[in-house]
Image (cartoon, rainbow, N blue to C red; front, side, top):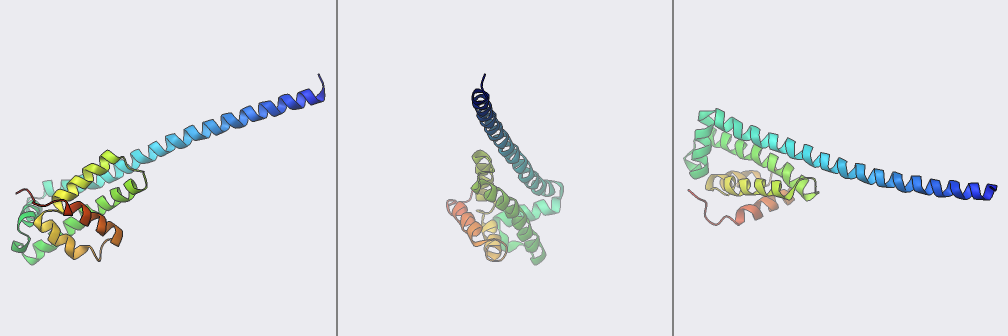
Length: 159
């Protein structure tokens, strides 16, 4: 066997190794993306669960939430402030979900759930009032526009 033949075999083996490496890296990148999606979804879900949990555990906060959803103006100033902060906290979690969905890091079905929650909570009479106070100071114009689009499809809030 000549040195030319050995060199040709070496080049072929090198090309096979390069192709195998590229295939392996592509597989790892796909697995990494999937893992990142799952971790992102878990973090956002934990934030939403914490938001719900505080309302469930605290009767006074639950009363403020229920009243604020229906009749924001009937809340006392301190209650209105708590309700506003509750809406802001929910929208922070939704903003995280929206950002991740926009970049393809959150499953579309999960984003749909957050969108429907936003439509229900922020689309309520009190939610709209709280959001109108927050939208220009607490959130980016792009996210505020996205929320406006979500709640604008809520013609009549279910009582």
